[in-house]
Length: 395
Image 1 (cartoon, rainbow, N blue to C red):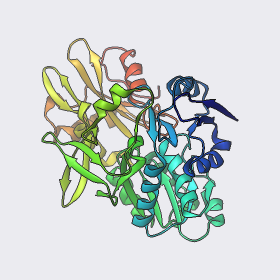
Image 2: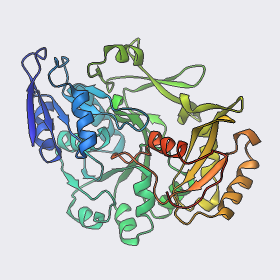
Image 3: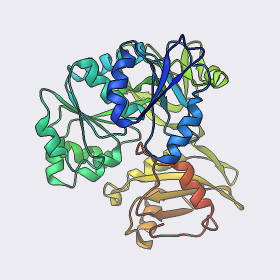
């Protein structure tokens, strides 16, 4: 289903609000100079938020081919304006880095930038995008239909859940590159993928850069990465977005001197970019600063995780101001696991940075793009009692 809305200030173009079945055709038209397209999420609440963000009755900004929603993992969705030139530059740079055009397996929601760019890369490369299930269970059959070079883009959770399945792991090994982004790749998961013969390429990027713009720590062609004194990442180059839908003040805050000022912190290590976390990952607990991203990195190094995902958040607390809480995506979590985690972290972290709670959850809340929904997680933890009370089990 698609809805066409004329933008009074868009030079007569019409903004297409489209759902997944119509997106490939609408996107191809938009990239060829046709009507701008705005992909809609399938979930009713997300779609309602997207429609409100799109403000289809308001003038459409000039030079826009795609308006894509952010995932909303740390706040309400924003409308990211992408020009055809930016999308093309990103797709061409990816093609160059990976070694040429190829068929893509589409296992990510196409209404978010990672899935949308899979469609764009296939269209611009003259190849095909093959739909695949989000859990990758049908990947062996999908791979059998692909020709030439084969590519796949996933988030770490998809990779972690797929590797224990021999047939799916074998199919993953048949790709020329498996792009993994949307969150940190745990070292143990990277090692397991390598042992299974999966050619993983880690990616860093965002909706504002047409998805991944740094592969395996090295910027794509044309992308310029700079770090401020505090490690904040700024990005420049032809892949940058044109602004936020109807939010010129937000655009002016994010884009300074033609560069995107991100909310991420990073450092250079042997010529490669290592993303450390977000600027707002630092919280004050008991009057002392705690880097949540650093706690999470240390926790990911605990061998008992066995591929389970983990997140560390700050939860409002009457005694500490903010309590550090770690949540592991495992339903069989036990008090013995909590004790082992605390012992592991005590060797690497000061006492004030050690999580007040270590919880097990059968399933972490996620956005439809697969990212952990930190806001919803914190909201749930904030209403679950005193932050100092240890809890285990499924939510």
